[in-house]
Length: 93
Image (cartoon, rainbow, N blue to C red; front, side):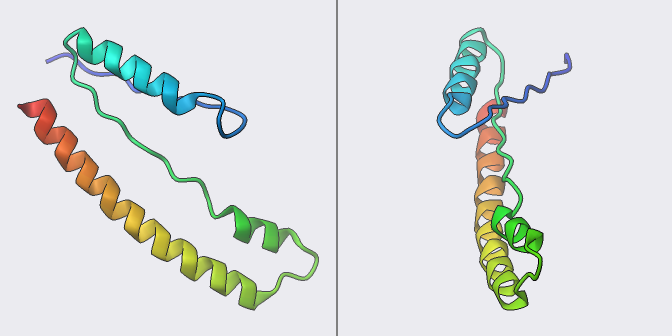
């Protein structure tokens, strides 16, 4: 078995075509007979970073934002694991 490769698609803003390009290239690789797996990286909790940047950050705001972020990250993590399981089963036949 040959080793795969890892490609990261970066863009400066939402809507510049990262996902579209990733899917285009994934389809091209799959059409060429390669197994393709897609991963997704979730950005940091930007709202908390902005609050922490203030001269006097509000701990109550940070606590609220962190609870929301942890809840959302947990849901996304479960979906990512389910996606990896499905992609592995598809790739292995």
